[in-house]
Image 1: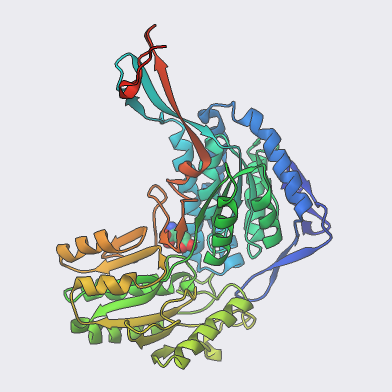
Image 2: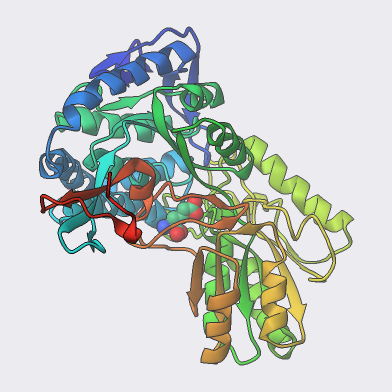
Length: 504
Ligand code: UN1
């Protein structure tokens, strides 16, 4: 039972529990305001119990083989696949992404599980020739211990598995604090861990807010903190944990991502890629694009076609397959997006599309309480230091920035933000494409594609303000394992590297 008195509980040490707090909170469907469930709000004491359970469980869990640990995850993999439609709809109901995205979230989760569990059958570690022929040297990985996973609402199934799947297969135990906007999805994941028979304490769920997340970050028994979310919170976590010897944080944060469209770009590809990058998930991906940098030779045609798309993309019920954009996640976020739209106007940009307030006729019946907003598109001078073109909005708020020079100028404009997560170039000239690949300051770079839709077996992370290690996908192994450099002497003589004398 994950519920008592209609309030969902935490999952700690293999048990569903109310925890110590009195407070509860509700999850609401952002498309219509319907209540989806009531949840216990976790306290520092609940985190303390969860970390203690994870710490105890680590001793036995780390002794299992990778293959045995992966067995539990294969069960979850099958369940994710079997329940694809149902879970996709739950993702859509809880976070408002249109249904194909809700289902893709679940698919991405099982891809991550498949990657991590499949990897258990691949011997890992490097055999490195020693400079002394009688010595063998190699690198062994060991789990770090307790891993705290703090995840965002916009990929409520995929990102928890980005964090947890590799961590668990490598032998770590986990304390999971999901975003307070999507506790229902987290609850279902916890039930999957219970159903799979994962040993008590290996996986723990504490529902709640920032204070619970902070308790994870501050707990000395937590060895690694994995965080995906806002730059503001990520920077605090990185600096707090960075000050503690032996503890590690890997944080993946936001972006102010660009699409560069050069003078020889295929405009069908350009308009298609920019529309997807800017408006899928209603702009609420950390890889969403809010800046389109377009060469003057193709600017007018690109603008006309992109504006037409922005005026016409279907905003509406995310469970309807014809919808392109669902609602924003919550009223506070709608207010933030609206403030940035106003800021752009105050900063003197030329507004091209303003669908911030949708017509009543666009709002589906029964969805009047949704947090609706449509695209907002404007043109601005790329060389002006405007807040609206440099700060992350996390919404369908897009600047068209015209340039007239060569690819170097386009990439300079591209790099002129504090962030460095994702970006794309649309060009038919391989020299321009290669220049972008080598000089764009980002972790995820795409050619002739949208800048969304990364695959789990590639590294996922950014540079500058966007990243501080990789809490996800393929590279997460670096954050959840220790490396031991092991050197064994096969001779009776002791011979040292670097010509160091072994005489005593
Ligand atoms: C995020 O942007 O918040 O690359 C995560 C993508 C997805 C993950 C996005 N695979 O669009």
